[in-house]
Picture 1 (cartoon, rainbow, N blue to C red):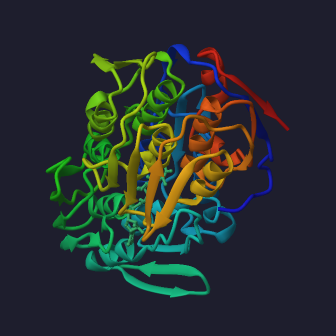
Picture 2: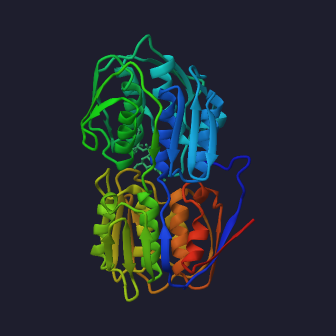
Picture 3: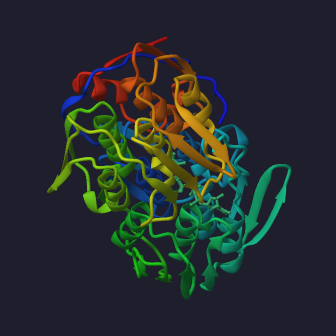
Length: 428
Ligand code: EPU
């Protein structure tokens, strides 16, 4: 997504070649916090969310909710959302274009206010991101939808339960599952969502909604059954740890041949990532909520990665793994089935000396002995993290431009890395 007013064009200057050592503490999950924030709209009153990460995406979404009439208040990592009895039902382009997750307001608007006017989210550097499944789901629950002048206009007399099949060309949709679930909790009758996303963030939303009084079963499975209720009550909830942030720090330890304990993470949410890292030969151990990595004598073995919906290998860790595989003892293959074109970071890795060939949306990564620091440009959130990882392992200095992307999804990444001994500075 493009630059926006208020976003600073900071850059990171990284002097590579230092092994990371020490402890790092993982923040709350961005992609779990965002739907919970929007779900607060389903119940008038005071919702309290704890362990909310301090990120630009959270602040963007707060602006959207404030525009609808919600009063918000932050105290460190606790976010209080005070939802009025009725709220505005227009989410304008200027707010939505900054963050796709704003589309989540569609479900709660229809459920509570019976109408919605939401800007269609725009382009995105990681690939085409349609919203057809969100709209199909709402229509199946009885909403009449038109799209005109760049806006989704939806109306209903009363949402009614139905059977919704949510798998598209690229598999199930996290966003559509969340959106339809939020609409269905207050619909009349029972909704069955088939081919629902099984991501932990989707399960968390379901658990949160049940805490508010919803009736959802099948949580964490491909079939969700939602029995509509008349009303929900606001509640308190703590956001789960960010599995992608945890995976990124484990990879940072691996790529710098460091020794790092990653705390506050749920290894169960990272099974596919841990399994793949073990396949590369990375020594790591899970102990309670901590993952210990000792990569002191580690050179990765090549592996093949194909991303898929949870519990498969997450697309949001694909780019970070690619930078690690740049140092492998042979050729690895990386394919992204969720966003087949999510490879913009490759061009920048090539500028640092990586040996990667792209063919048919597959990256063939041949390991090299070293990368060399270079000025590079971040293009999206996970691509920026990848460039940070590559720069930490490269010889010499790198400048990573446009790091506003990374500020959307990693809380104080440079401070956490500095504590591990990385030589990374933010410059304006
Ligand atoms: N899709 C459709 N139709 C739809 C919706 C999605 O065809 O109506 C397709 C998408 O184009 C994609 C696939 O289905 O190929 C999966 O998209 P999904 O809807 O699951 O993604 P999302 O909800 O838009 C969330 C995360 C992304 C993460 C994806 C996949 C949030 C706020 N975003 O996006 O996170 O990559 O799921 O796991 O939860 C990130 O954090 O960097 C990020 C991009």
